[in-house]
Amino acid sequence: MNLEGRDTPVVPAAELTVRADLARAGGVLAAIPPVLAHLVANQTHAVFSEEIVARTRGQVESLARALVRTADDLATAAEGRVLAGALVEQPALLAHCHVLAIEAQLAERLARDGGIDPVLSPLLQEQIADPDPEAAGTAMKLLAAQARFTQCQRRMELPVGELAADLLPDVLLAFSLVGGPTADHAAHCLRDQFDEGQSRTALLARVVLGLDEGFGPALDLDQAGLALFLTAVALATGHERAAVVLATSQGQQSRLALILRLAGLSSAAIETVLIRLHPSAPLPRAAMSLERDAAIALLAEGARR
Image (cartoon, rainbow, N blue to C red; front, side, top):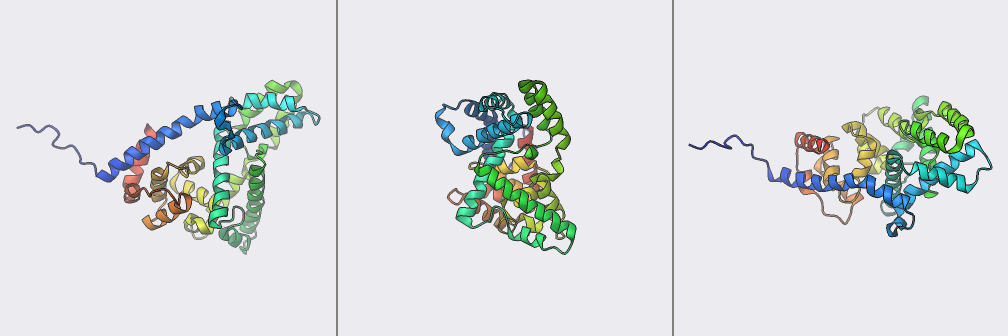
């Protein structure tokens, strides 16, 4: 009697469909760093006119200009371009700027098409009115930070203070190498002044973690607004916030559905979010039908690839 394969588990059709979707979406995400680096470095490329790539390069160039001016108020545009050329060689910095550009573009679209305010959401309004002065103060700081983020993205700017802490050493090293002793002194001052705890992402996390009702209110996109929603999903699932932002991109719907399931959202709530983000795209029904444990397993499997 041939018993070979007798104990082979039967994989549900929904999981096979989602696994294939995740493999395709994962391939797209894996291709982002080298393609982005090429497009940002090559200003004459036909695709460079695309908004996200333009915003990404614009942020790098603005960061370079801001840095050279900390060393010399009279620094020339040429000096800024030299530093920008060095910064473009840093994949992690490009990825950071790329994610910010995606978030900003999505926030603008949701404001235009869905009436979701990119700066002052109903949830943030509630927190500003909180009787606890510490909670209200943090919410006010976030309001200011979110307004700055919106303005900076419209101008394609990236302030030094909005860098992730792990990016700062390489950015300042490039600044020192390109600018010499004067730049090296300015880099030391910037390092001493840098406070990631006052950045927008840190303030977003503090507001979400300080909610009396838990993450629940922040997992409602319409009430929380995009920025707080993305942060709440990241905190609720243990994902990097940047990974959650990338999952909002077109073609990543199955991955986002699994992440939202992991965050505790119901199928109806997941459908509402996906329709908000991609109103014309078909819903990933297979991913939406999976239980939380299956979602965890598939996301873990994709992370190991």
